[in-house]
Amino acid sequence: MSDHQRDRRQPAAGRGSRNPRRGRAQGTHRQGGARHTPDQKRSGDTARERRSTPRPDARSVALAVMGAVRERSAYANLTLPAQLRRARLDARDSALATELTYGTLRSQGLLDRIITLASSRPVEEIDPPVLDVVRLGAYQLLFTRIGAHAAVDTSVEAARTAGLGRAGAFVNAVLRKISAREAAQWIDELRDGVDDPVTRLAIGTAHPEWIARAFAESLGPAAGELPDLLAADDARPRVHLAARPGAITGEELALVTGGRQGRLSPYAVHLDSGDPGSLDAVRDGLAQVQDEGSQLVALAAAGAPLTGEDGGRWLDLCAGPGGKAVMLGGLAEIEGATLTAVEVSGHRAGLVRDATRDLPVTVHTADGRDPGLEPGFDRVLLDAPCSGLGALRRRPEARWRKGAGDIPALVALQRELLASALHLVRPGGVVLYATCSPHLSETVSVVREAGRRGDVEFVDLRDVLAQVCEDEITGLGAGPWVQLWPHRHDTDAMFMAAVRRTD
Image (cartoon, rainbow, N blue to C red; front, top):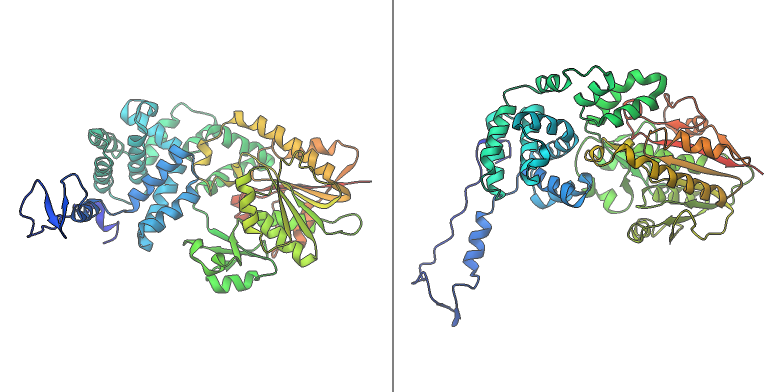
């Protein structure tokens, strides 16, 4: 029975099997000559408990992921696949669990505003596990086709199953009040008296206002595209795979996976749905999950023109967890080059080693600001730590984790790392600076400051991408750096700039 069919029903607790040879309910009993006290676990008790445990369904999977995100700051896009495999849901219920998980996390800020109105109390005063149940129920009521009766009843049952005491009555009352209006009516009430257009957009698309405003500033003269950008952030993205250069082509990967080739990276393949970890090509190391925008970063780092010959000494200065190192390492192998990868986190450095173990890549656990390496690299990729605002569509919880106050410390780190990269690259070599964020402070501001040095020049990356992309790519900006956008390019909002050392 699918989860959709269980909307009005929950699995009944199984009855323990009765042993006809058991003569007494209490005291000791014999089995194979051994004596067992009532306090000892019997195999029949274990089976009975296993049968009485509710079978995982789409909603329980969603709540498990939401709890992990809240309690351990886990990433939903990493936690959900493991939960789905553990629950063994069919394809239809897996799709529902994915929609409920990502949708509820993505809409959290908007849902909390509505819950505050409906419950007449701030969400901070609601116990977090209970709030998770209410958020999930509210998302079903406002943004899915699940019937109101089913959404409310299953939420109340979820509270009971989770052992949340008398919270079921509270869940029932709040959700019934929410169900009395459509989402648009709640949004209209939240927007009442709000005249600023960016604030109104942020409310209606479940974005923090500071993020919507930062996006508008980054779009500049194209700020009229902000509604399309925010909508693209809220849409479920396709899975992007990257074929490993030298191991398999993008065309071959599309054939073996049933996907479609990307229109920008020659190594990209798009899948509409499914668990990529179950694909043979991914398990065998022929491909990896990687946004097409990230693939373009590695391709640009390998393809930006140098002054003088490429000596084949390449560097990835912030390599963890290894996606771009794999792509760059594959390209280095084709070109007869070697790649040095630096990662400050020991755990993430281990991930890089595992991912690149059969490529010409040497991994160092060190701080990229002072890695202790001999300067003179021909190419340096600096995929700098950033706010991650460019990947909100893939990390739905991320928009609620950071604030505007987090940006200055990140910018300071980015500047230090870029200074280190420019020290390590040889004259005539290129540093490819990239962030998965369009925030002007993390992008244009950082590279413009570096450009004030007397020994650097910028390479126009629009020309570089024109050489490596499968199709003509437009909407990159005025140059020499480029900004990718979800609503224009179906990629994460990657920024990249190529800085070449001069003599």
